Length: 478
Image 1 (cartoon, rainbow, N blue to C red):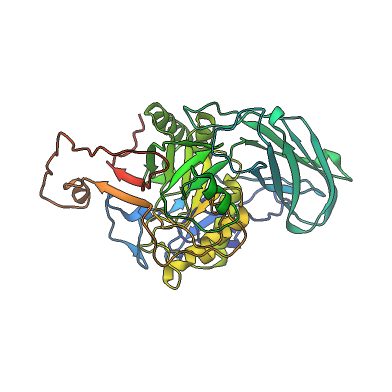
Image 2 (cartoon, helix red, strand yellow):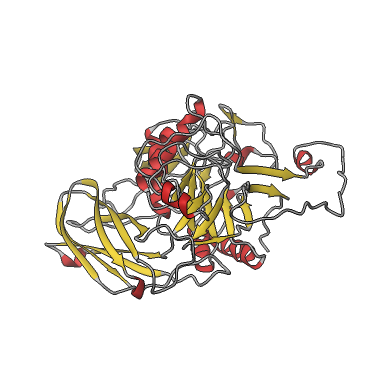
């Protein structure tokens, strides 16, 4: 599930493949005839990985810099940082590699809080990815826990990788809405997916996911004006009124933090520490966590706990410039698709964005975030709001104007736009530079009492969303 830095993978001396991304799950077919086998992962510094590892490994403004590099990217650790395991696929059957439920609200755009039992319900488009050593005939069965319906589709699984799509409805009478913490409950519903081959029913395979029902909108226009909502319903791109969030029709105050890796030695991290971190954020009054693009895709326990407690997730892809910019390669295409498929069932994840602090401008090097990175993300998941970067000026085309969900058109960004999202303000002093060797201490003026301007505020007023600001602290393991 995780190999950091370039490495050759061998079994019994035979080369199976080469790892070049920390964020890919590598799968290899093995010959089961031998009882004794030798697995080798041989790291080789000459293997170029194109910056596909945790960008803050070799230092950041909050982390000590190293003096080792691959290209422009500072390096630090290498190794196997996640699980290594065997998956047995019975002869004549198939493996389920991903279960991807996409949840779509079926009603009109709401500007007031939806009420359980009184809304238009949801559609679930469930995409199941399978892998088979040879063509296999069987049936795919899906059962859900909201109305206990069972959907069965006869199918042929071809040799290699394939997918199947099953659509289900979730009526308002059968479900409860999922809400952020402090706004309501977080009900989760089970999905069970089974592939059963015709010739050998005992060789069936099953996978499980949990889903929640919510409709999230990343809002950039004044949707308190009914005339604007009517007009924008048929338009694409984003607006310049500001940036705020609605969930199930209710606007809410986003309060939270950016999440950097808990460990610069990420191979020794553990899931329970991430559960504790999320619970601490909830106990601290937060309802939003942004996964910062210079770190890692988090372990499952992080997202599971966000689902259970109701913290929404604003999620960067793992790009942060500084030697970690994207390239349109097969490896990076696989990485993006794998991670979006892996995480797609989590109702807590409400926004995908391209990168940390890489302003996306068409006609420049950073247009790749629109034309490649977020295009791939949108192809895999059109059920969530997408955003060019963090921060960003918004989209010109490619998203529905009211909620920033992909509309299937090419993604483009404006050349000039009003600022609606920002990073800062920070009081630095020399706390940051001291991490990387500044020998002098330069305190800053405390500026107390803090001067506050008194202004009228409401959704109808223009605004700027602060997605990164304040103070920086390291996570505690205690």
